[in-house]
Image (cartoon, rainbow, N blue to C red; front, side):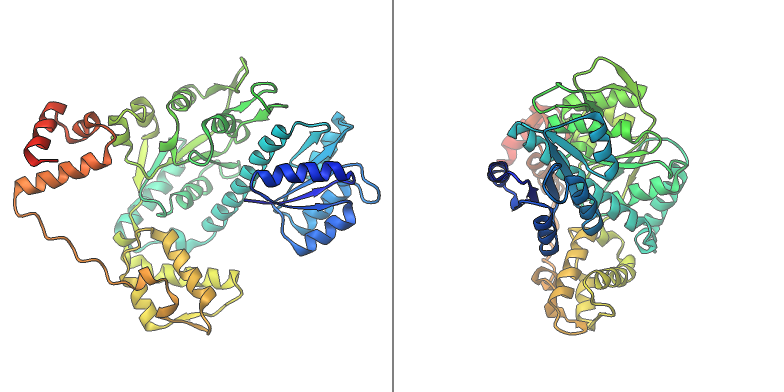
Length: 439
């Protein structure tokens, strides 16, 4: 859900547009002119501003300049009934993300809003990645395993080889991807982030490869994809294991030839980008289950690095906790906050299944709720304070060990055939084992 400001001197347009945008699940505020819009900007932060260009008093372009000065993160879309090429160029030069030509279709508004909000999310993500690279504590480690990964990443950064980052969610794959870009000869070029899990297949294809006007409903003008716009830089494919099979084939062709076509176009284009991909899935198992192309896996898996979970690098916890406390304290205007010994002990003994992301959330919650200059154990989330679950007794025999392993693989597999492939046996043998064990 986003905060959207609609500015138009025509009441019917304001009301109609506001009803539609609210129906999409967003919060909406309306203003009849630039002065009312500026008053709204003083009260609330907005993700998107939809503004008419021609209004009495302050024009849409003048309002755009004020929005960019007061709320630089807000994305502006200008509306006009007098669309001209020079007008569009001026709007873009002033910082507008896009423009709508009146009368417009409301479905067009929906598609544009979806794209604007995704761009805003990606900008925030890129900014977070940039800040992360500038924070050395996130890229330093006392763990031998993590230090080997960082050494490999620095060596690999000098090349254009495709890199595949694995590991659990929250282990910092996005931070390392940004670091690889910053360490590479492409550092002066753009770093584009594409979240393969956040977009529908239709939008993801357009985001990657671009589209031409008229390619599908709502494609009212050409759109340059991330692969093309990041030429000379790096494209980070986050959660690449979520790519639909049709898009996997198109990505494979791009990796092989560096050539592609925009959606709806016949013209073949080229892009010079370095690909870094990340996934928290076991892509080998996905290949065995038929959900990920084997040829694409080997094309991505030129240099593979698996980031260790936080529980596997406990020696980094003390420095990481101190770094995050300083960072969060500055963000929430609580500098100098300290940890009491009981709280520190709880943080150091927790297993952190959510890894660094869970640690950040726990510290942020504690810092916001703490009443004094010291974070106490009771300020931490309950699950951090809970004692670790007792370990299950070890299997008493090889047969029991095999049964538990087969049962676990079957639970993680979509079909019997997939489970058999992961176990390295044929489906008939697996069927017999299931019957013998009553699974």
